[in-house]
Each structure stands twice: as C-alpha cells, then as structure tokens.
Image (cartoon, chains in turn red, blue):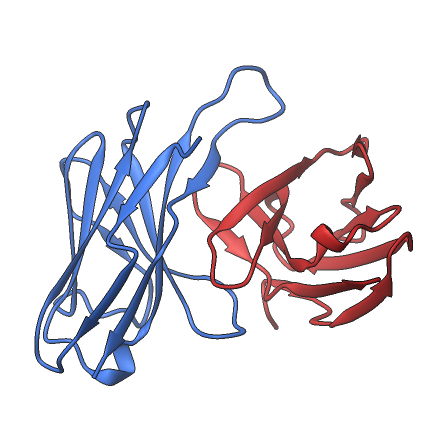
Length: 110
Length: 120
C-alpha cells in the first residue's frame, strides 16, 4: 500500500465549478500535512498547510480527519489558472522527510 | 521571490559523462536539503537527505556511488550524477527546509525550480 494515496484524475471541470480532492495516508504517526501545487514541468509550490481544525485560504479549504487518516482540498469558483496537479504531502513527527502522493490533475476549461 | 535556487535548469549530455546540479538556499541557512527525482506523470520520489557537514542519507534503492551528494556549507548542496546513462534522464528537484515563526507552519520545504536532465 502506498504511503499517500490520491485519485490521479484528471478532473475536468468548467470555470466556476467546485471541485474536491481526497487523499489518504497510511502512517498514523504523520503529524504535518500539506497541499502542494505543481504546474507542468515546474517545481511543486506550497498551496497550504492542513490543520486539524480545518483551514481556509480564499477559495481553498483544507480538511483533516486524523481518525480516518484522510485529507481533503476543496476549491470553489474554479479559475482557468487553477489547472495544475495537486499533491497531497505528509510528514511524520520528528522527521523532515516529506512523503508525496502521486498527485491529482485538475483541468479547468472555459 | 525564490528562496531556493537550483542550477542548471536544463542539461543535455552524452552517456558516460557526469553532471553536477547545485542547490542553494538564498536567504536562510539550511542544515538539511533534500534531493528528489520525478519521472513524467509520476510523483516526486525522495532520493536522499543532504546533511551539512556529514554524509547524505540515501533512500532505499538509490545508489550512493551513482548519485554523489555534497553539502559543504549551510547554503549549498550539490548532486552529481556520475557516468550518466539514458535511464538517468529525469527531472531532479532539490528542496530546503526552513523554520518559520509560529506553531502552525514549521519546517516548510521550499523547492528549487528543478533540473531537467536528458542523457543521450
């Protein structure tokens, strides 16, 4: 079983749509969680950290369910510029090592 | 602006040559840097953890003698792909861990722009 699993997609949605990505992780010792965004042939960039209480940054909302070892990312009012691959990332406590999911590809069309 | 600089961004070389990639933290000291590799449409795979002043820690299956890592200063780590072959063609990305203030965003990793290696 992969340490971090994501639905690879692609998710093809129209502008303005709401889209949700899911992620599960296997290591219950994981303590830090992130969503990164990666554009084609570019490096990953931090989109947002994920906190236990859930957190929102503009159109983006992240949720964490530790009991289910499940992380989600909700994007509201999708823009064309949101088209990218979204990477779910976890880190175990005491380690600096990030474990990446394979990513979920999002394509927003006019 | 960028906080981690990676150079070069693109390398095309002949089989059998060695290629060195540099990763620099621009305005902070990074005792730990990381080297990843990414194949097309695949996720990043950690190759090794580069520790300033000591030997790198390699992930299982990564050849130490093939991928030489040197972390000679707090702002620079280098990855050398020795005797490169076509199967080494990939996107190599480094990252550096930066402590941030507050309790909710510690140890964010910032990535270099990556190096696309093509071995002919």
